[in-house]
Image: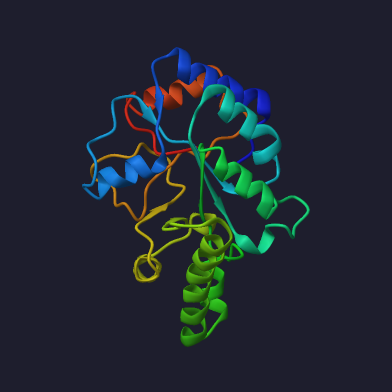
Length: 219
């Protein structure tokens, strides 16, 4: 959820010193889609949700220092709008670095479970399709494509949402289910470890070892 900059750097240092390889999320997705070979053992994917401005001020320098790829999932309604969020120009600079891939987190980060109870079926269907499609359209217009990966807002998804995401052009999506990504997972509901600041030192080591030293889906 929230990791301080020193703790994040300690993670990157540990990965580098202990034989882990940070790979782009796209590499993992391509494996699921049978477009690429399996990632090497001890592969790790790093992602970040929401697009807070500290991605630019704190995460970018460390990504450059350790030369690690990062995928960030943003909801465009906040960009260049909310005080905590990145600007479009900062996102463009992140992308130009060659280390950051910017993907979709819906348009304004709705709680789909709550909306499904609040709205009539037709209204809910319209909201879902708009959230998923509008986010892609805005990000591709501002940053260039492709935008075809999704992080489910609040980790909420169901069979209906999976179908609508596929129909909207997404080829992969991330949950917040805490276990390593493996051959049995669906590319539309990939697991990831949602880390907090306490996940450092031995706690971080246990997470990696608990993932079998193999593929860890994401931060």
